[in-house]
Length: 124
Image (tube, rainbow, N blue to C red; front, side, top):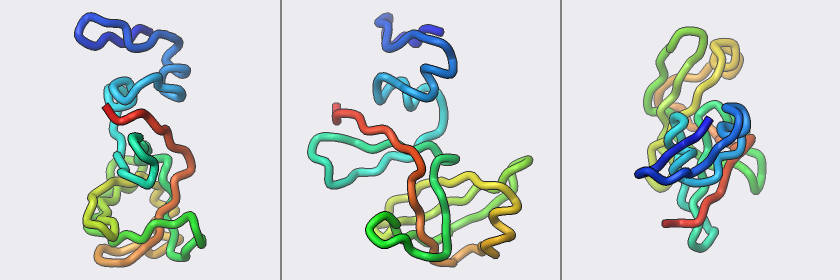
């Protein structure tokens, strides 16, 4: 697989390699939905795919981000959630129907979010 950006090769490799280890912000965005978080890292941006965020009703000290559930909807075999962080930023999570039921999630509820996996790229 070869990903081109304005006629220039951004990255090449197997589909799995490119998806799991994107070489740039462009490749990360090109291959699907992502959440962009501005953080304390200077000059860098953190990207997290919706299925790589863990939602919980309890806080993990030092690792959790508070958020409010704005909207929940079923999308085939999964549930999607639109959340608003403490600073008003909007981001999305994908989870199983079982996880939603287990946590008894509902719109308007405050939850905690932890990234299971993220990628950091220099700000361009």
